[in-house]
Amino acid sequence: MAYSATLLRAAILTAIAAPSMASAQAPFYQGKTLTLIVGYSPGGTYDLTTRLVSRHIGKHIAGSPATNVQNMPGAGGTRAVLHLYSVAPQDGTVIAMIKRSYATDPIFSPGQNYDPARLQPIGSTSTETSIVATWHTSKAATFEDTFKTEMTAGTTAATDGTVRFARLVRRMTPAKLKIVAGYPGGNDITMAMERGEVDSRFGWSWGSVKSRAKDWLDQKKINIILQMGITKAADLPDVPFIMDYAKTDIDRQALELVFAPTAFAWPIVAGPGVPAARVAELRKAFDATMKDRDFIAEAEKLDIEIEPIGGEQMAQIVARLAKFDKQAIARAIELTNPD
Image (cartoon, rainbow, N blue to C red; front, side, top):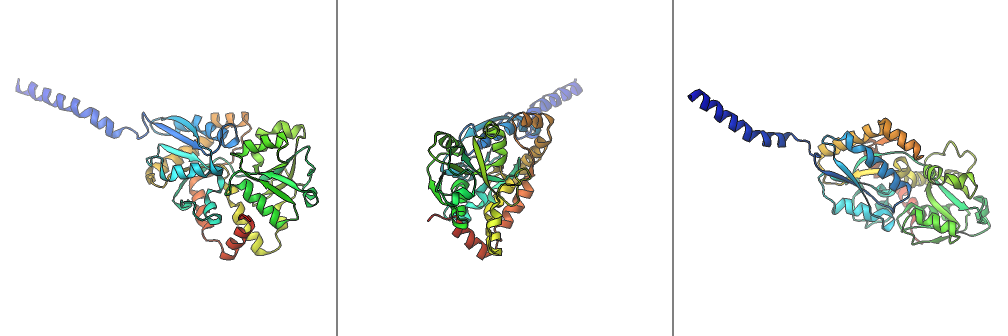
């Protein structure tokens, strides 16, 4: 009887301990929702790419969390950056696809209230070349046309690539540009261009144009008049390249600084307080998602280019940007800052 009582007590103690042991061993994300913030309005390539990632990344995270996408447009993408940096939970349940220029914006516009080096990159779905497009009814059918005829450029906020690249082009080339600011996002600019409110859109992703504006390309409703980035797009061999307008080594370094963010064009990042182990888990899940056959197949259907860059490599690029020559930084600021 004593032996049986001992066994009974042991069984009871085991039963009591089992739930707490299971709880301790359960993956962090089990039963949770991973929210992916996108810093722009619905319908654009940032939004579509974020939603594509959200549909697949959960199955590559231990615990298979549900996923949710939240649009947070505003201030040319800065609103989402600041939310992730100082408002969102820092436990890894909220990450964001933010503007590609997040790593350089504080250089050009002090007072951004965040340190890019503290944000923790998870990965980017692709690199990118930015282009300038004009509507087919615009008098500027080529870049050379802008040397003689004023062209209006729709832009968002002061720190966004749409306006920064337009300022740079106006100051480094003979182009005559009138900047029309205040649009909430890139989609709003393209709609304004279609309505005839503005002639052009700057800083438009070439990959996005090929996927989201393919009909416009096929029907020749838009003209691609200039390309901007570290290297030329292989499929735009005859379109003028901004680097060709650099007259000095300092100019070339300044342009490299300005266009460095195109190396990670669709950046997904975690907040500064997310534990390192969780960041590593999210990076691993991102890398696995980029190789997921179902993810790749859906990306092809959506015409979203996938040429991923990992979080660690992104972090190295961000760190390098902080070490640029002071003269090159000063020249980059001179080219891009408000008048």
